[in-house]
Length: 92
Image (cartoon, rainbow, N blue to C red; front, side, top):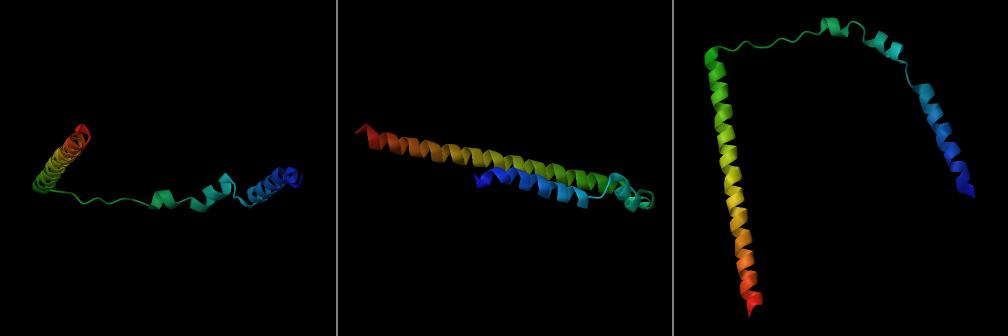
């Protein structure tokens, strides 16, 4: 019967945690002004640099695609090999 008091202990601990939390207005006041001061500065790229980056991305995607196709064929070959060996072993 000692476990019947367990839920009450959990509720009591949760209430203690709620008192420690800061309210939304306190958090808002603490961060007020940060959004206005923060500005992002992006480097401007020339059309040549944009094309260079684009070509690198396309080349990497092509390499990834070819590697994925190779892995599919390798997996298919290994699976077919094991099926063939299993067929030879269990057919006799």
